[in-house]
Length: 281
Image (cartoon, rainbow, N blue to C red):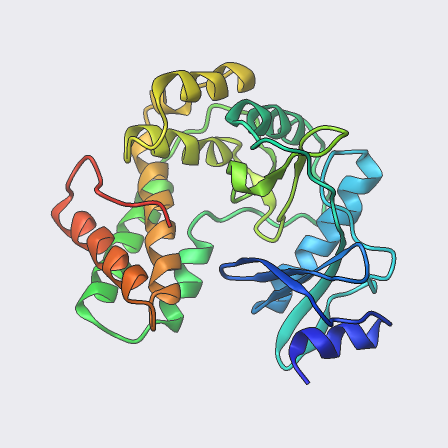
């Protein structure tokens, strides 16, 4: 029996006909017979954090993904995978905007973080992925860049008041609903500098040219701050890029298209080439 089928059966659900919604470091499935999304991840501790954050945000009335009524108190562990159960959010037509994301982040950052929320480390995901990667010249380069960025991170002077951070803030982690946009995917949440949650749209604009100026301006205006004008922007941008490369490093084996994109990204980092030539994946 698959991880999905086994986990569903343990809480009285039927996985027959489940539809894959997304696959990255985690896989999410919408069940055919119940308004439930099943999320399967590789890191139990991160799933435990996400469940705890979801329960806290529900208590705060924050517009975020909610655990399904059938969800156990802790993630299920099936064949080493962490499985969580979420309410299916009926989406409405239209893509969430960068302004929607900014409004949600501004509200999140103003909450008082609970004492149990761990300190956010922007390089934690990079370190974890690099420990899983077989040695190669490319991996040695990425490790060297990570070491240099960690040293530079220690000297950063933050401007914004610390608080809860999402950890992986982009419009793909926002859903449009009839009640308004909601934020999802909190497994990288922590207590730390809000500047981190603002860095990805800035990188999309200034590293890759994936956002035009009006779209980026809508984000900074809605939030009330432009991190690209901050003296330490380059440090966080470098970390964000490294996270984008190391995620692809683990996803690329067996997929020639992803492997080619991974190599293009590594080559750009090695040559320190701007603008980056990266494609969206």
